[in-house]
Image (cartoon, rainbow, N blue to C red; front, side, top):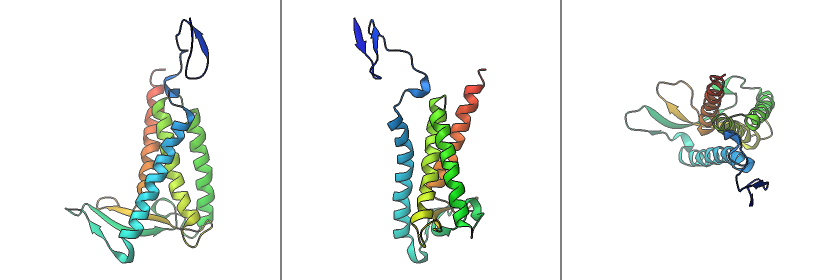
Length: 178
């Protein structure tokens, strides 16, 4: 008896060929992780631009979290403000490097974290391209402020940093066995 597995390969006896654990999803699904991060970031920034305009602030009970609009022309912590084009070009290079890492990752955890970070990086890059004044000079829309953490940030920053953390943990975990 011969069967056809998902990859379209025939195997005798109906058994599917072994695949590495990190490759269980198709490439389109992995790219979907980045698109999810990008879409959720865009949606929350659209909400923030609408709900928090003209200096309006929303404080969550207890004052630990405050929602307010901040236009960030630099990278993390405002570093590179005034050099938006350089920050944008460096961002493109880093997003490409993250994408290559995610595509070549050996575990599902590492791959998931990498693609999540790619989506976060793309979210902030889109702001740099489409927000006024446009081109590569736009400001990133930040809108979440936590009282015990200095800078205001956005969902893309969470996806980027969280994704990197997940990917590094996945990478380190896979290396511990060796």
